[in-house]
Image (cartoon, rainbow, N blue to C red; front, side, top):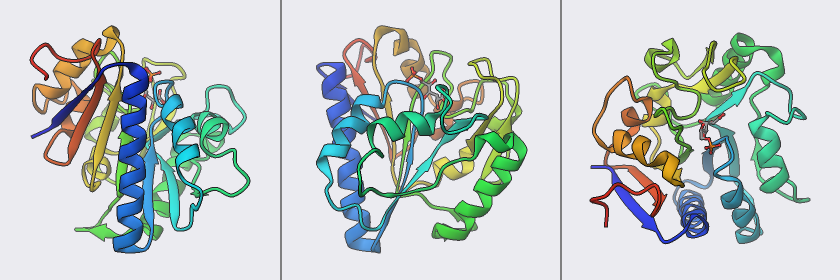
Length: 234
Ligand code: 6PG
């Protein structure tokens, strides 16, 4: 059953997401000797990454991945990597970062990233296992670059190309539902009244028309502020 944490404010939601990331990293390092975390793109997680940068001094064994990327280079204002670079990854000593090379184009970048994930992550039943996947949530119920009605939502494999995304830019790269769902922990972070309907749809149960809802389950937590919270959430 997907759990919901209702924070008093967007900043408290960011702090809570930061704590979930920090805890997952410490647990993975102590149990498995290392941590593989996939970051979300968009704008919501910016504060979380700024906070996390102040919470961890020793990044030994931490490997940062991305749930999706736009088909752009690392310096492009649209790059999810760039946002993480500006907030979490700007320090002198930081985690090992695995950037999706969006500038190669969706197909080539997706193939290369799939090979990297499959080569470096532990696997369960042939699927790479992340320790934590941090997910954003779009107003239409998308997450990562898994958009309603897009073929990528049904794709098998590890990482796939996305075209005609309704959220610009249209060409992207995304981890698949299969890989994201295999993560030991999935944390959604959604704030603001404009996300309330999408949160409700996410929690209503798996529906391919609401790609984020396909990632619900016992290992999934949705962190919201009061404005994004469903009416019945405590
Ligand atoms: C992207 C993100 C996307 C994002 C949501 C929410 O590349 O755009 O991966 O899934 O997380 O669209 O975006 P905001 O946080 O900006 O509302």
